[in-house]
Image (cartoon, rainbow, N blue to C red; front, side, top):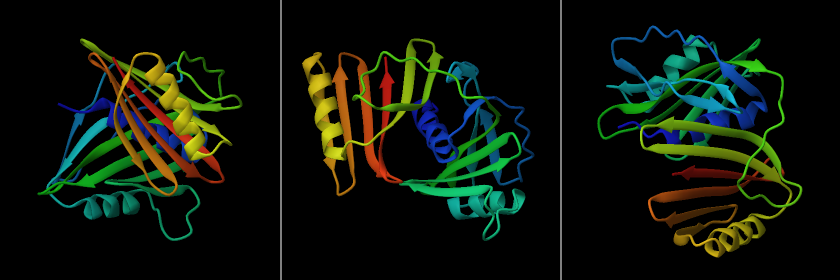
Length: 222
């Protein structure tokens, strides 16, 4: 089964890198014979706009997939339209072409690689609403929701000027105070991962220092 929250986190990261809002694009991809593709979901919204993505499975390693898209998208050295970021175990490659944003995320498997591919058209920024908590002065970069039978998921990407530790304390107090059980806390120099459970609901938070601000990705699955 394809993990939609992983795909949503990937799309949110790409949008954070380019600071855009996107609507559904016409995704056309003629894969080489060593890459298989399948549709991820037909019911996904990003910032209240529909979007879509493809799941990739490759018989070759992630490095070969990335090289294929670097060549396909003409992402040579110094090409400002292309961005690349590490989000272990994933690598994200994206390209902004006029009003179209293309992005691919890939990671190695024991044999070959897996990942996601999406294409969207840039639209004007819209005001976004959310019921999830955030510290005063936080800015919503993107708020995305998806719905599958028996499960709904929301991924919200925030930025603020508070420290990683301050944000971590805020969200621990909020979730524990609302009856959630904390099951994971992974602290590093410039990042923190928190996981909470409440019945069958799950909340995953990744807090990190990025580009002079703190980025918070909240992944809520109900």
